[in-house]
Image 1 (cartoon, rainbow, N blue to C red):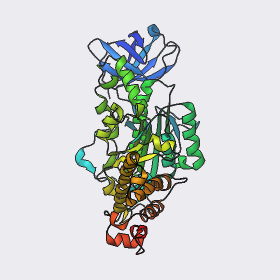
Image 2 (image 1 turned 45 degrees about the vertical axis):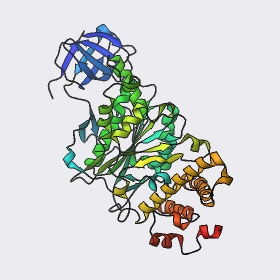
Image 3 (image 1 turned 90 degrees about the vertical axis):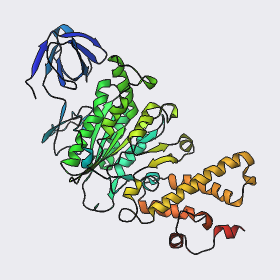
Image 4 (image 1 turned 30 degrees about the vertical axis):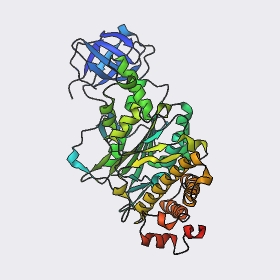
Length: 469
């Protein structure tokens, strides 16, 4: 940290959230900035770019009332930090870590850089153990594992906010060593309207989940540059909880599309060359700098798991935001508009959904020995049901074989009995529902299950195929 610098009369112009200064001092990229205008208000910012003549500062607060000739810019000589301490849980913060709940200032035990510290890949441990969310389509079919980054791909108007709150309220640890472990939620709302922010706050408070959570709320009316820092402040708090207080932390970030749109806006104001759909070419590495902060560290008991939520414009999964997120993360949970219209909640489409680390946190010693086989059989049977629906649309249901008609009925029950749920389910309840659905299919079709599993869970009763004949 170098000595604090103060510059007067260097402000040249203001373009949106960017303040352009004449370069008269040596500063670094991403360095913190304090901008004091003639109105007496001190605004927080950071250095966005530097060249031989100009310093560009991203203002994190509104520039209204800023008098350029009277502006004084101070450089503390260090990047932006977040003061964190043992009182994080149960608090509500704005997008840059300032308390919004009217409580006392946060006791500061450590000041951590919001951009995180590079983690040596050799220090990473393989993600293990299971996090139960209470959502059957996730727990049973696409399990979330401690240390994983598993995004949820949604669309405009779909109930991703409701799903995020449900997960935050009901998520708990499972698996080896889960008893007595510390578990915490860090929830960040990025660019959300006032009513959505209030819904997040009220839902967590009323359920009691806020006591084990830290809530960060960046509103749609806040500066777009502040939107770029909200996930970084949230992840800094999560890293403290995970690797200093040794908790298992689940970070929910919604909506990362709002973050990427703010990145496009700020990059355009800085004159960056646009790439696909106007987004900057560095968006992949920028998203990676956030997503890769999830994981397990050798020698540390705590873990950091991410559940980022993003909306796909026009439900286009090839849009740059979901496309790049899919390359970085370990799977995806995809919401279906057709299921939502059919009244299925949560409307999760299990066919395009995937959890690449599911095998690392399920099965014997983690969930149930029969969990992986049951999930595989349910997936295969539902895929067959989707094919039967397509065939029925061509030849009609009367033209289908008896087996295909059974798969049609299975598909309807799968969506309205397994995926749809009125209340949170434990994994055991989800598995019982899954076994009940498979009982209606011919035993010969259950190729993903062993004879012992069929006998144990479906009984030795008559085969449905034999009854049909």
